[in-house]
Length: 191
Image (cartoon, rainbow, N blue to C red; front, side, top):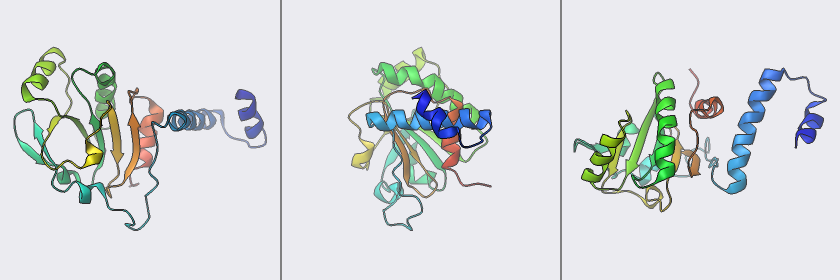
């Protein structure tokens, strides 16, 4: 693989830092694509040829751990990092710290982090006592479309400001890597 990459880039003069960053993003994307776990849906800029997730999930209600109801459509106009998890899922738990770091790093960006479970309120409260994370945890409520009822965990979607799913992954990941932050920022409008 290294030999092929060197041959491709031997005729192009690219600064080493740019090449390293580009290759890391490319390898991260390709590793997900090869296993079918990560992909961009490619429906950006198609003039609404596909309905947004907000159209399909307009009635989806989330519940905070305090019992407050929140409509998923309240996040329209923001980039959304939507992670489905379960308290019994070890890969889910192992990736939460990296999600927390990513959220902290992106606190000044127009992005919402939603970690959603379908478990009972008491189960989630007990989990949070053992794992004092500072993440926005929600319980899924009424009106969830099929795409928001995964059967494998963790399951993560990145939704752009227009409501297009631009990234999805089944399985855990270190979300705090600089290459992933850059990928998320690439889905966000400039300015």
